[in-house]
Length: 263
Image (cartoon, rainbow, N blue to C red; front, side, top):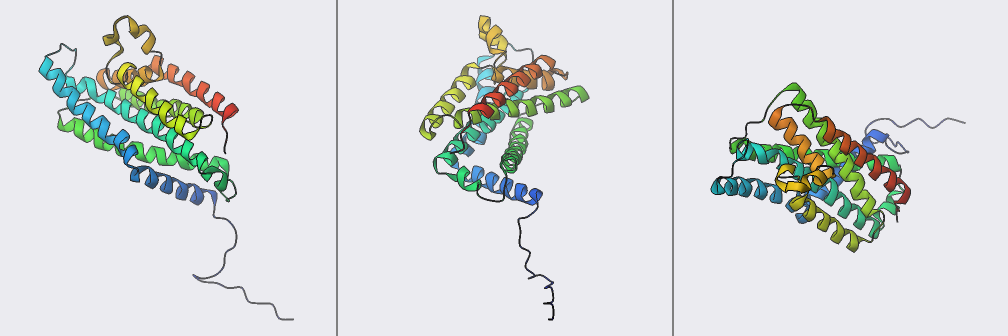
C-alpha cells in the first residue's frame, strides 16, 4: 500500500487550534475594536475627560483660584486618572455584563480560547485603549502648556499608580458585572462613576474636600488621582496611594473570583 504524500505549501491543511499567543492577540484586537466602535465607550474614554480638562482649566483661570501649581499642571494628572477609571471600571463592567446577558462568554467557553486567554485578551485590549487615551489626553494637556515633573521616580510612580489603578478598578468592574444583571450593571456602574468623578478626589486634590479628605484619599479614585498628582506634580514615588490601590485590587479580585458568574 502506497502512503499518501503529505500536503505542503500555503493551502496545506493544519488542523488544531492556533497557539495561545495568537488566540490572545486576536481576542485583544477584537475587544479593542468593539470598545472603540461603541459611542458610549468613546464618550466615557475621551470626550468627557477632554471636556473636564479644557473646561476645568478655563474655570480655574476665570475664578482666579489660588493653587500651588498652575491649573493645567493640577488638572492634567487628575484627568488622566479619570480616563483610567472610565475605561477600566465603567467600560469593563458594562461590556462584560452584556456579554453575559447575550451568552457571549458562554459561547467563548466552547471555543479553543481558555478562560485565562479570554482574560488576557481583555487586559490587552484595555491596555491598548489606555495607551491611546494617554496619547490623546497628554497631547491636549501639552497643547495647554502642561509641564509635568519628569523624574525617574516620578515616571516610575506614575506607571505603577496607573497599572495598580487599572487592576483595582477592573476587578471592581468585573465584580459588579459578574453578580448583577446587565441593566442593573449599566445603572450601578454609571452611578458609581459619576459619584467618584464628582466627589472621589480623582480630578481635584483631596485637600479641597475639607474634612472629607480623610475619607476620599482612601477610595480607589482618591488613591489613583493622588498618586498620579504626586508623581507628575512633585516627581516622587507615591508609596501610600500605591499601597491603597494594591489593597483595593486584592479585595476586588478576591470577591470577583468567589462570586463571578460566567452565564
